[in-house]
Length: 173
Image 1 (tube, rainbow, N blue to C red):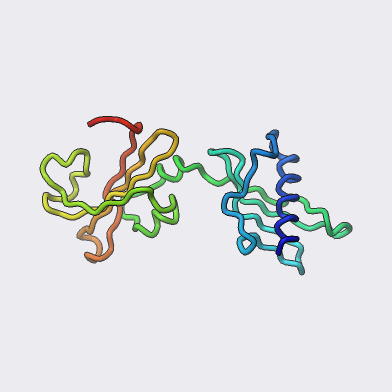
Image 2 (image 1 turned 180 degrees about the horizontal axis):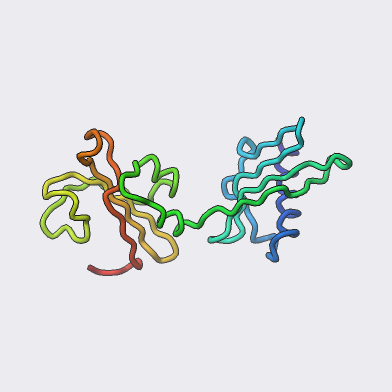
């Protein structure tokens, strides 16, 4: 297991020496765990699920082991991972909480609330007294909010996106 981790670290440094003019000390695999990296010995295919260059630049990387030299791998595919802001923009009405958690991860703050008079910028597609859920993310000085509620289109136990908003952290309404 330790050999596998060392090989992956070596390959990541080699990979970004080839494709990114970045100091290798800044490169990380935030989600890297031995069981997340997949290596198929029969095909020589190595998949690294998330390599992070900086806060806005991440990649999924697929490499192929060379036939002549088993210590060398060549890059076969580098797939950019959309930034948080891009993923947030892609949210549409009707997505479930599970879909949003897969897209953005779990939020820093969640609240289950009831819509009341003067509740602020809560979407107007729910009525006074309706329950809704507020998910809040904070990234680079911006607050990103997603609201969920039961709608007429779904059973009461399936809450979907009814709205979203974003603003600078510290904004007073």
